[in-house]
Image (tube, rainbow, N blue to C red; front, side, top):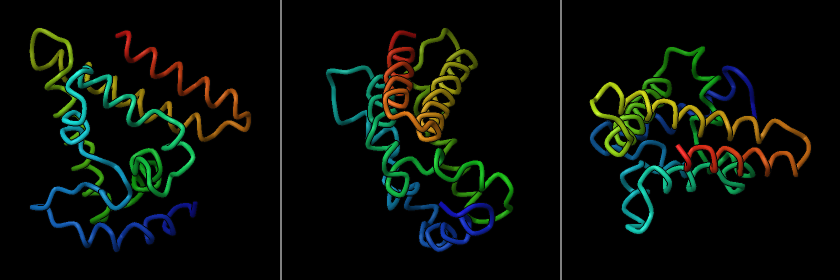
Length: 151
């Protein structure tokens, strides 16, 4: 993966293609909006479905088609561009949707739970990609899924 401005340069054409009204949020990278993920399985809790659909080996092994936040988030943090703006909208969308299904007795508690869940999902994926040992990487993904599905 290119670093710094090179990564952003690769993403910039995509950000230019995504009109705010379309709300596709990096669909071309395979990152699905949580509402779409949630609608796929009525038998599972919405949070568990979102966790299982993102914290997995497919996303780990294919950053080019997996979660764009885990792949490019740290690079875009140094930019002031349309791509960073679109990434921000993507993150807001995830947080707002996860908060709808998160535990809590008020909006602040639900948003705190959603933020913690999303941060663990993204962080777990980044760490699993970073380690050399494939068994450790698998364990990280499994531990993060189990931890989030228990909370």
